[in-house]
Length: 120
Image (tube, rainbow, N blue to C red):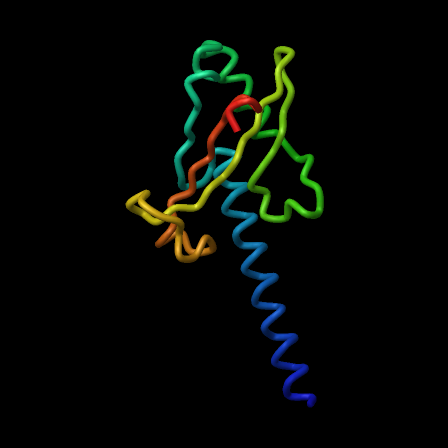
């Protein structure tokens, strides 16, 4: 019984550590210090480079993460009278399918997409 409780506790600890690592990798990408790609939808790109730059700065400064958004992979920002979403997805290195392990940068390509809320 005690061995099972200890095993469960260790498994939960590994999962918490994994989630914290994913969150850090996401924050690094969002703050432009990490590995990954940033995609901007055509609708956002059409707003012009100055607006896009301002939106990217807002994403970098973003810290309104509710508890249920622990991996810090989604956010909503308002600017220029419009609502924008940003979302981080995890792909394999070939960008063909989902990553087998988002906590492992050796097998994961992070992609942050900036879009109008209507694009989602």
